[in-house]
Length: 428
Image (cartoon, rainbow, N blue to C red; front, top):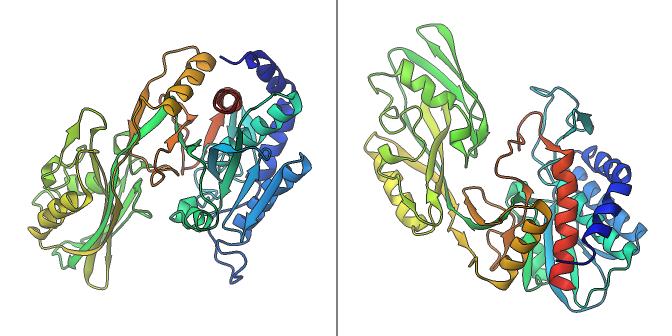
C-alpha cells in the first residue's frame, strides 16, 4: 500500500470542516431536472449551477477544467497520459419537504450523520473526489500517470450527459464511479421497465392511485371502493431492492382483490420479490436472484395502468425477460404500452484494475474486499470495463432517493481516503 496512506488520512482530518462547508454549498443547489427553456442549460438552471460550482472549485485549486455545454464537465489533474477516469454526477432526484426532518437542501448534521438531498447520491461522493485531487496536489504526492474527474448533470434522467460527453472526448482506459457500493461493484443486473394497461370497469373498485416512479417501491396506495376512500400504507424503497420496502400496491391487492378480478394479485403476491409467479424467478451464481416489482397502478380514462421494475441476472437477455412478462400480463388481459431496459453489465474481478481497487479497500477498511453484484444501475453500466467503487457500504441504508437521504460522517471520510489512495495506487 502507498507510503502516503497516513499523510492522506491526516490531511482529510485537518480539512474536515472545509470539506463539510463545500458539501453544504453543493447540497444547497437544487440540481434536479427542471427544463428552463434555455438551450445552453439542457437540464435546467440547477444542474448548470452545480456544474459551475465544481468548475469554480477546480479553478480555485489550480486544475484545468472544461465545460461541455452544461451536459458535463471534466477536471484534469495534470498533463500526463491519463489512465483513470472517476465518473460522478451532480444532479439529484427531486425532493419535497414531505417526510424530511430537516430542509433537504440544507446540509444538517445530527449524531454524526449528514442529511440532505445528494449527500449519498452523488454530491457527497463527488466532494470526496474533489478533495482527493486537492489532497494529492497539496501534499505533492508524485504520480507517474494522469487522471481526470468527470462530473455530469443528467444521471438521474437517463445519462444523456455522458452520451454527449463521450461524443466530445473518450473515457480513459480505466473508469470507476462512486455511484454504487463498496467494496467493488463489478456486476450489475439487467433492467426491464415495462408499462401496461387494459380497459377497467369494476363492480366495487372505482379508482386506484399508487406509485410515482417506476423505479421506486410505492409507500401508499389510494382507492375508492363502494364510495369509501381506502388507503394502503407500505414502505418506500428503491425499485432494485424491493425486499427493503413494503409494497403498498401488492398489499392493497392482497386485501381488496382476493378474487383476482383485476388480474394482478396472482401475478404479484404480496411479499414476493423475484417474479416467480410471473414465470420469472431466475438466479445465477454471480449476480444472484432477480427482482420483479409492481411499482405503478393508476386508473385513468377508463383504463387501468401499471408499471413494473425488473432486474435480471447476467445469464439472461432483455428480450427473453420481456417476452415472459408480456405473455404473463396478456393472460390477464393487459397490453404492453411501453418497454425499455438494459442488458446486464459485468467486469472480470481478476482484472488488474479491479484487484487494485480491492487492495485499496482492504487497506483502508481493514477487512477482506470482495466483488459484489447489485440490481441498481450505476453510472458506468454502459461503460466497458467500468466498475462502481463506493460510496455506500452494503450494510448501510442511506435513504437514497427518499426522505432524509444521508451519509454518515464516518463513511464520508472513508470515501475521501478510498479515492485518494486509489488514485495513488493506479496512477503512482
